[in-house]
Image (cartoon, rainbow over all chains, first blue to last red; front, side, top):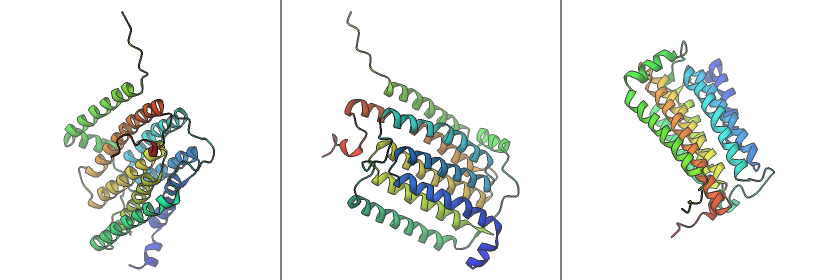
Length: 179
Length: 102
C-alpha cells in the first residue's frame, strides 16, 4: 500500500483531520508561555482524543473523556492555577531554559523513533477494521460486571481513597485547642 | 483501509510530547497537565488495539475507562499536594523543591 492508496480512504482523511489538531494542541500544552492557555489547549487535545475514540466506535469511552476530563479535570487544573497564584500573562518561568530543553527534546524524539521503528517492524501495514456500529454501552457494562468486577471495585476504592486523601491534604490545619 | 500503525504512531507521538512536557515544565500544575497528555496517548493505544483485535469482552475499552478513573484520582491528589507545597513554600516551581536532594 502506498501513501496514495492510503489517502484515497475517506476514513484516513477524517483521522488526519482529528489527529493533527490533537497533536498540535498537545505541543502547545507543553510549550505555551501562558499558563491558562496551556490548560485550555489541553481541552482541544483531549477533545480531539475523544473524537478519535468515537471514530473507533468506542462511544462510551469517548463521552467519558468529555465528561471526566473536559468537565472535571480541566476545572481542577484551572482552580489549581488560581490558588497557586500563577502569573496569568506570558511568563518565561513556566519552563526550563533552552539548555535543559535540548536534552529533553532529544530524549523525546529518540523515544518516538524507537517506538515507531518497533511498531513498523512488527505490524507493517496490517489494517484495522472500521467498526460497523458503535460499541453498545450495555455490552461494556455487562463486561465490567462479569469479567472485570473485582478491578472495578478496586478502582472505586482508589477513587474513595483519593477523595479522602485530597480533603485531608488540602484542609487547613486548625490549631490544637488548649484545654 | 485504516492501518493499525497510524493509531500507534499517534499514541507514541503524544506520549513523547507529554514526556517532553514533564521534563521541561517548571510549574507543577503544568507538569500534571503533561502527565494527562501521556495518559491520553495510552488510552488511544488501548482503544485502537481493542478495535484491532475485535475483542468480544471489550478489554481495551474497559482498561481505558480504568485509566480515566485513575487519572482523575491522580489529578485530585496531585492538586491537593501542590496546594500544600504552595502553602508551605509560596512557590510551585519544581526546581525549588530540592529538600530531599542528595
